[in-house]
Length: 319
Image 1 (tube, one colour):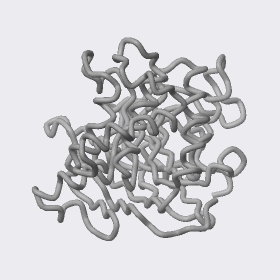
Image 2 (cartoon, rainbow, N blue to C red):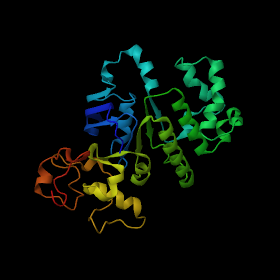
Image 3 (cartoon, one colour):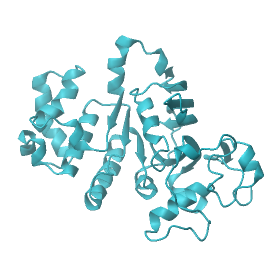
Image 4 (cartoon, rainbow, N blue to C red):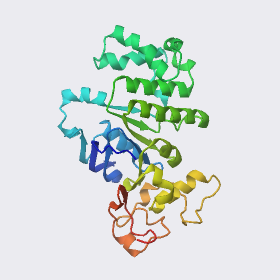
């Protein structure tokens, strides 16, 4: 675990609801912080609210309630004319690299846009930097003239990451940035991310549904279930020291391809059901093998179980 403890992002009681009539709460009173220079992983199944949370941090979605503090200043305090500058500080890399390219735009044009648009360099100087950008992601200079259809998904995603890095952001949000790629290509991208994390020492939020993949690049991991953050733990302690039954469930799914039932933890693997969120108590109680009456009637709060390890659970063994 990193020794630096300077907080770059502090999220407090963040809430986001869609479809006010049906009251679908995507993010429900989430609080955590991200330290300077670390990679914070965020894991959860589809519908857990992790991508919505990432979009709010990147100021692409507006929170209904709660605060996001970036470098000791609330995002709500940024004036309209300042927002443009803010987008340079927090960049986002999406799941599908093809979605961000114009089919007729050469790679060099894509790479120069960030520096030119944010007035970090003249167009002439930005073009001169393209060679270095490509070298840093392991691609030859000739790729600067190629069009999107001439590159693989992994190559395109590397270029998207290179563009995000080109404007020297404080934070990069990776939203399922490797899940659309083949397994072998995914591994190459993950190794590349670990490498540039060490070299550039930038801060990142890495969002994914595969807990093993997220663990491989992150310093700490937050586990989300139906809009709530249920556990925060250092990645190196995840396998042996996790406490929440849902975390155990995700680990079992990640390392077992054939089983739908965790014999050790008794956790059934089911997809999220946003319509089945209970009106009171723990949201995970209807799936949890350890749930008791208290779990069904009271909502557990995220509390520190050990130094740096936070968990929201009444029902786990020994609690």
